[in-house]
Length: 86
Image 1 (tube, helix red, strand yellow):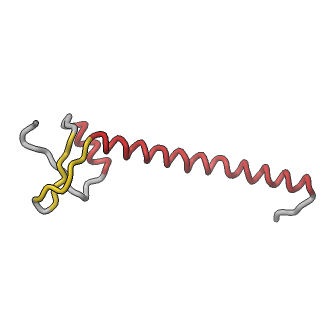
Image 2: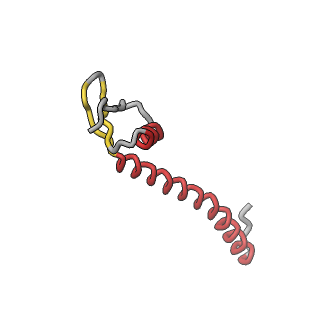
Image 3: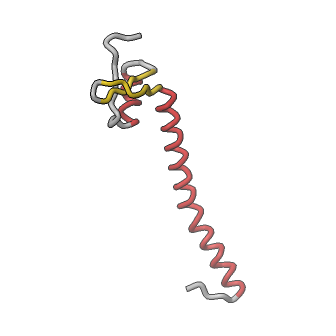
């Protein structure tokens, strides 16, 4: 265990926690609220959160990229059937 004990608050961002755990080379941060321990954040928690964020960003980008292609495909299919999509 390191001394002094490094801690965080409920209001700290995941980005800040990632920075602190990396910079201070620690694996766990006690979460303190009004001087009372209310939880512990591990580096695994921080990494899992970041992986979830990256997956969500990838899905949003994939949807943004694929939807115009789907619309174009539907438009081409509709034109072939003589349907106006206006």
